[in-house]
Image 1 (cartoon, rainbow, N blue to C red):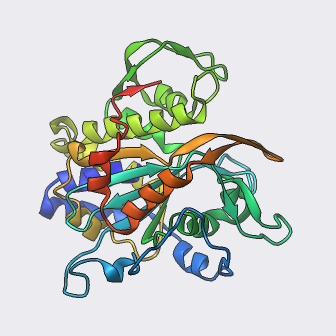
Image 2 (tube, one colour):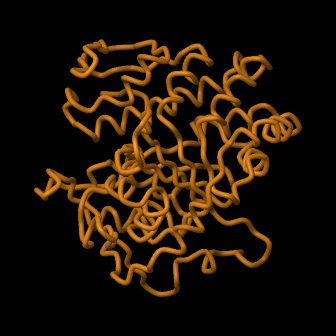
Image 3 (cartoon, rainbow, N blue to C red):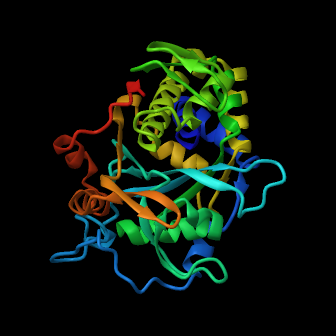
Length: 341
């Protein structure tokens, strides 16, 4: 939803985007997630997926930094299922994405972290003694601040902004734009709802879209296929928003942005107007999608988890840290977000 809202603001034009951003800003929730993350005890244990050779790969080492040149930005996006009456411990973040926008604001790479990824989570008083487990446990044990810390430690990347999105918004936003079309590779049935997605093009209204992005069981690749569906849906929704039918209809555009705003909680420092202005040159073709590399599975007390590919993750995380994701996509086959499972 985050990228969709920003795409709508950017596509509305410079002047209009600022006005719309200011209009919906009051409807966006604010939470000091980054401040709370920085207040957590530091993780002393190094990440096996972060290898620094030579000069630091932090922002200060990037060419031009310190000379008034922009640097790449990293947005942590959390899709949260918060049903009525649930506590934080019951709520879960089954969608974790890192949106990296390059320093020239000409390309955005979206990296997904499957919920069962086997990663290090530091000790949480009364909940966890520290060690490796599934990444989605971080949100249940410590909310967005702990996820910020875990993802930053895992990747070696500084998180500039955090956006928490309620899954309930998928249905409403999809209906506002008139639905989206997705291509399904093989006919699948969702056991939870009984709905069947047939091979070929499927038109998703809000209800179907919510089922589509949430389904995991019944898919050959399980959570990996669900991640691809979520990326595919985001790509299709962004394309729909950037189409003339939405951007030239003030009423529909206002409905879209207002509904998206109500589903978002962002960090205290995120300016919608400034971000929309900076991303105004991005198009649907400027988006790249990938998932953190994994190799096989590992059996844990929390169930079967995804074992990360050490060399693959090191290469991907290095590209994120050095703002070279465009080069990384040239040499690594990314998901085209065209066909879903």
